[in-house]
Length: 385
Image (cartoon, rainbow, N blue to C red; front, top):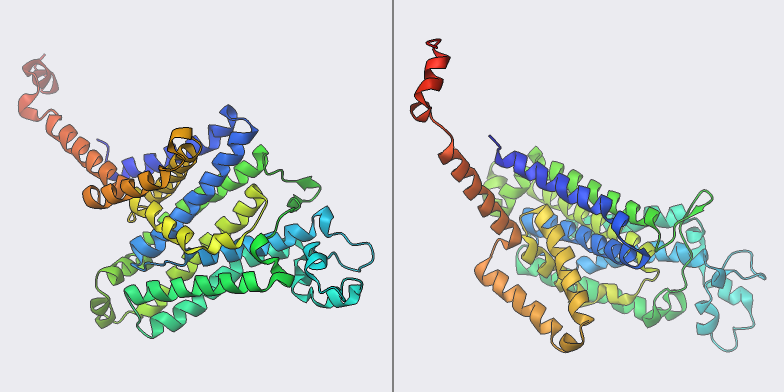
């Protein structure tokens, strides 16, 4: 008889199998688009880990996604032909010439001195590592301040919200270094040896799909460890866990940082797929939208939050490209969210969970019992025939 655990394993295997075979049936355009949806699915996992399992409603998850995106984009920008300057010892982003003061445009030395932040990013591997390390470290530092001070509830949401808006303003105001509102465009391709990953190519799609699969599996294993169980107990009642002798802030900081690291990984993958980085990644609306993804999919289910993020983004893209829904698609998505909150508080994953419970109960009721076994079979077992 199938168990609920086997159903869960099968659902993960089915999802991973589907995303791995999709390129066999898709053209270049849809391969690229689905890769973007898978990145959003990774963000859904990050939100679920933070909100669903840790009970930390982070309204600034776009900060960690944006940091990861910018770290990777800086390396890819220097790899672009638009950043190769023959008169300088190091590549310089083209926008630094456009944004330089009129008197300094002819003075290359001044521009080179102003590009100190970009020097390490000449190595693409440095940008790749920093895309995960920087969000993780920032989250760990923020978590240390917040959780050691025992700040909880809505105050955490306000702090993360304020922080993402602050960093967005810094990015925009530092136009000579970051290109401000315009973001980083005309990026090069990430190279591994002599191979360059094409944003519309199947190899990059598989990088994204495998990364998402590993994140799902590792996150699921993590929440099933002793630390994950303690974290869920903290979510339900912090004081009780604290009285039992556990270091509550340490668990919260760790999982908050892991969630940020996953968001940073999603950011670096998105830059490779979409070929740009923008301050819009740190918009308030984008961070709140991530919460909607997790709520619709099921904030207490890693796979549910992942699928919810993918489905919501597919629906948004489809409706925004439909002539009759150009003005109404945002309202429709908002209505869907309200209906889910009112009638499916556990999201689509909760609905699927109830369906599995019903199925297992029905199968259990219909299993033949010894009293209902036909007489000739009972006689056969007893050796009478």
